Image 1 (tube, rainbow, N blue to C red):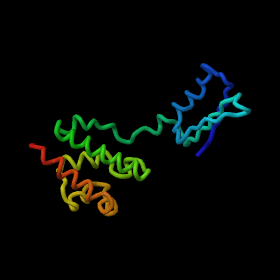
Image 2: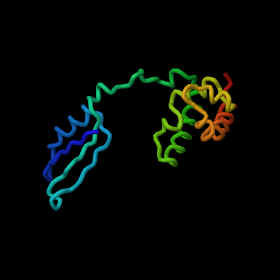
Image 3: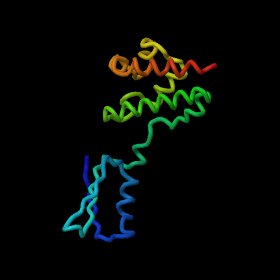
Length: 149
């Protein structure tokens, strides 16, 4: 990882063009602002990865699950995402560490309600089944009762 700093006088209205251009053209990991010299300067420290943001684009095209799933299926998918977000916030991890959108969509599409079926979804290994399986399957069972497809 690399670091770059930007220093601006206070007030510095309209002087952040260089910072904004850098942020949009690099793969930023973190950016923090600090006051320096008794509050006379604002210092931004940006941590970034090598390469341009455009080069770090998605490997696969973005999927619109609203189009991929039925209306009722998308409603279940949305509730599963909400549940996933709650778990991720409680554990302090990114949501995709719990389940990815693709995995949640497959849960809905295949109407998964058993640990065996959950383990058959790509990327859902034994650890995820053990850690999140019972809760997600109970929610799936409740939510999918309403799917009449």
